[in-house]
Length: 497
Image 1 (cartoon, rainbow, N blue to C red):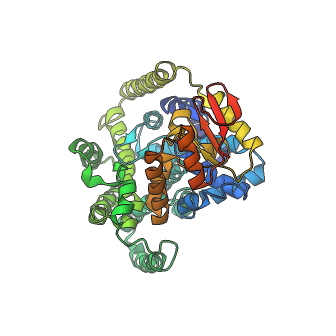
Image 2: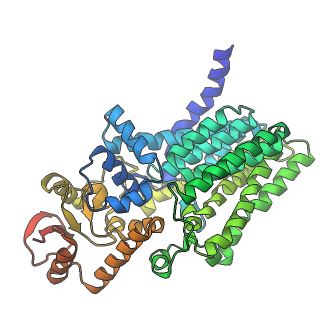
Image 3: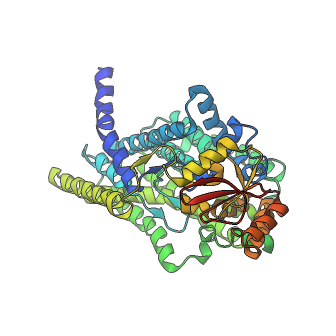
């Protein structure tokens, strides 16, 4: 009997998994190793696998890496499985999507009446979108620990509704190993929900909250986050000022509307379900716990406006992602079931969502990015990969490189990812990491000034930068009057000394 029940629960997941992965990947414009935030995550893992890597850039990478255990966990998996890092990260990408699908189906199975509405929710989650002005997307076209942590957190919400309370802290622990701040928002959500759902737990929760508060005080006064309650001075702030997702008070009205619209949607649909006797056990507690996040955001805003370092580093605006997904859960219910569900209605909504997700994904694949493979498990073949492979194989790990400050955007991956070599500046990611440490911010600012004053892609400018920062090689997309070390199509590598 138990085997049959488990099989019935597993079959929808197994049936949905391949199309879910395909639709999620298509809507993310394909899977790409080394893209975007992997400019930080990949080098941080490489540091553990090859300790000689990044002797120059280690302080920059460590400014963020020491705040998370993701790099240690992935490096440990690489050692145990002996998989190449690109293959391992692809496997983790697939596992993250599988976990997200499982969470959606379990959550939907609790809240919905039709067995097909959870599938509609899963399809809705493949419609990747940015959580407005937060720097976060609901899906990424590469392995991102934030997505993994989100999937763990969403499954924890489902387990809370199922009254499988012992699993909730274990799932949050799994999330914390991947991405601590995403875990923090789910933790607040579920703590608030537990407070509302279980009055008998309130006294123990108060004791637990006191212990957590004492630990948090130690963390910010003498522990890993010591010194972060200070205000960012103008020099530090200037480096990250362009990262507008860090400063909600500068958001235009349409961004506020986009992020806040989920709140009335959640409340209206929840109250509608309650009025018709459709709410399930602990659902009201779940909603009230989610609304606690709004209170947290409001309390955080003054500290962000005052440029308190820790307040900015927490990126609290990303808690709107949790409200976004809960709003999606209720919107799917309102469309596919409502108070008078029917099979035809659910089928029509599911079909429309499938058409929307498939159409958008195919547009990405064949119109917007027609030359991009759906899955690039390793670096895409091309001049950049050829040049960086030579750099990795023919130059010492201690060598310093000069490249276009925006090279990761132009070529799809950074020198640190593709060649495993230190680079003078990777503007997009280095400026983002600068929010975690003032000394790193000053390093980034110093190099920004140097690159503005000197033309990095000319012989004179490249040599001047090489003397100042002890650089060895220049990679550039046009000929330069310097000693050539390697040539790959449109890319040239020159020796700087």
